[in-house]
Amino acid sequence: MIDVRRSGDRYRGGEAAAGIESFHAFSFGPHYDPDNLRFGAILACNEERLAPGAGFDEHPHSHTEIVTWVVEGELTHRDSTGRESLVRPGDVQHLSAAGGVRHVERNDGQAPLVFIQMWLAPLAPGGDPSYAVIHGIADSTPYEIPGAGALLHTRRLTPDERTALPDSPFVYVHVVRGEIRLREERLTAGDSARITAETGVEAVAVGDASAELLVWEMAGE
Image (cartoon, rainbow, N blue to C red; front, top):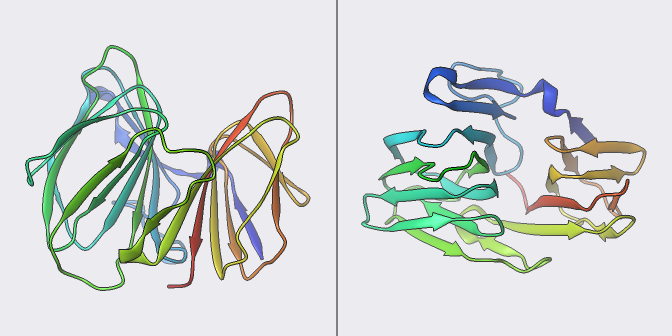
């Protein structure tokens, strides 16, 4: 089954007065939908838009694998393990909250910041928090989240280029930019697809512009 979810159907959140806009693909905070709590290991897929100087003050996380992909701008990250980093487009940031960690996320730059943040459920609770940034990850290079039993594939497709999606029990596709076709469905930026127990599915970039995709390969819940 291929279940397409449109960008316009995401739950809206954030705090406009503080320069924060949020768009949630799953139940999140006050937006509760018992039929939309997770898909595979994924608990959240949030698009965050921060104005210059805006950000999320120090807050806690636990028992969550948090992966962040910057679309435009620069994300400043600091956490209670003492790490501080600047995350830019093309970087994969991974924070394993494990038994508990606190962090700050801000736009300290002069330009608007847009990033996609995805939360995954761990296979087992507890442990020590860890943090990593892969700068400029190469196209088609998978990034493994062993604590969640998941692989992230980042794909950048030129017009008419196609890529085979994993033949896995659960596959989640998020269109970062551009337009793609999944069988008879066309998806644009912000759209996503939840693919369950399908094989031989391809994503094809359509239109005159390149497409950028985040593809999660998951064994199950």
